[in-house]
Image (cartoon, rainbow, N blue to C red; front, side, top):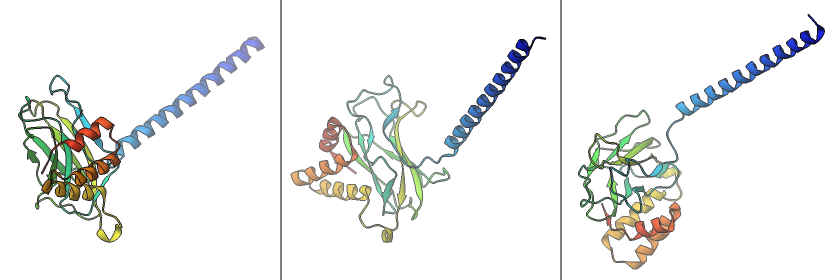
Length: 225
C-alpha cells in the first residue's frame, strides 16, 4: 500500500470521525431544546387574539375575538376578577353554540365549572366575572381559556387564552391593569354616554398596543357584563 493511499485513508477516517461528533452534538442540542420546550410552563405571554376555526366555519370579521389583557401574565388583587373580551360574533350570525370560559390551576385541573355565555346582539366588549364558587388563591397562577364554537363543539373553536395570578395587596403599590380595566368598565356601564369616561377607556386600551383600527373598534363597542 503506497504512502499516499495511507495518508488519504487516514484523512478520510479523521474526517468521518469529526462529522460523527458534530452530528452527535447537534442531535444532543436538538433533544435538549425539545425537552426544555416540552416542560416549559405555559405561563406568560397570552394568545390574545382569536385562533383556531377556519374561515369556512366562522363568519369573517374585521377585528378578531380579542382578550383585553397585556402581553404578559395578568395580575389581579381580586379573588373573583372579571376578564374582558371583544366579541365580534353576534346572535344574528350562524353561531348557535354558547361561548365558554374556563379556568385551570397550575396542575391543569378545572377550577369551578365552565362559564357559558350567550353572544351579544352586536359586536361588544363583554366582561366574564368569576362567581363566588370560583376563587383565585393568593400568589397562585391560573390559566384561563375563552372559546367560541362556530358550528358545534365537535369543530375547532376560535379561542384566546392567557394566565393570571392573584397578588397579595401588601406587595402591590399600584392596582394591576386588569383591576383598573374592570373599575373603569363598571364606571362606564353606569354612564355609557359620558365622553370623559370614553376618553379614559380609549387611553387605557391604548396601552395594549392594538392597531389603530382595532383600538377604534374596541373603544366604541358597547360594554356589557
